Length: 483
Image (cartoon, rainbow, N blue to C red; front, side, top):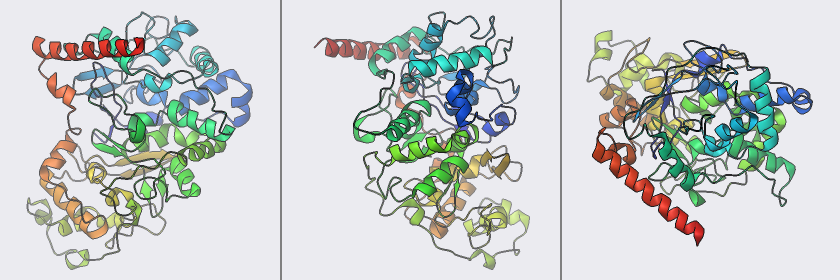
């Protein structure tokens, strides 16, 4: 598949890997954001803006059918496939019969109108912070402007024990702590707006914060310190100048959020490319400024393995001229092709023989590129396997995938590892390295969480282990509350 977006869900504390092509869905979505004035004076316009900021369409629109908010989007998880629900105002198959209270419970508490529990593939632990006024606006938008689609999407049917939705009640008791957002009086309105957008509406922590053994977000120093998302790595967003965003200017951050591209620093791919395509590029300028103001105040978290900022790595090098044009295509396809040969055949026509990319920045430089200079090579490998796709202001940015569904050339795990190591040594962080096994793991969607390994066999014994663990944690939580 072109690339993977990862959301996490904790249906009995397991993770969800969402895969798909956001760019295809975006082509059919009514994503023109209302103006500041419309958002401020019109309830439905405000709800539409919130739906865009919350990235609802990315999950609830199947890119194959292109029926907006009609559900049926396949979310591939280690426990099976979860299909997103129809959230159009269809009275038979959607939420057309929901009261505003039922709508609120679904969005903020993860409980459907019929009383059954949702899997938090939809990040309701973050949406729990939505204010009553914004829930009212969202409800008005979905009920009065969204077109009803009278079709039932494919239903989720996970194997035991993950098919027991009621078990989510225990997980919610343990980890669903958020309440509707209230401004902090010791900060100004801009900072509070930024906190609300980052923590709740854009639900950034769902990707950028590591998780515990039961796949709940860690707190404390781990908040926004970066996390693995299946095949991709969501970077550190804290104010640390080496591991985080402390060395980025406000202009850099604004440009990245709105376009996914900053010369000499980074290019959005994978989940972040989808966020830019479907949501961030449509935010009003004041909201972008508010997000930056809040990010600036996140306590710095330093990765001890990093000695300098990811964008500071790399030097221009033009060694592939020694091999350019001298090898036949059979040499490129051979299992023992060198990294230099692979780069010459697969990469240099766009990124140029010296790795500097094109002068206009359309094909980015590999030098001073966070994908090659960070503390993990995973995003480099994922970009090679799954490609890069994002659409900004109607213009598409595309790097072809070299994975199994490649339209140009499928590379083996060994070839991807060889190419990655060449790129890291030539243009990035030479301390990093990639093995064939690393590529295999990333190709398959990343490392399997422990809880998924425990419950992998659809057996009574595995299910009981998970249930006992959840019950014990719920009992512990209840006793702690009583004390």
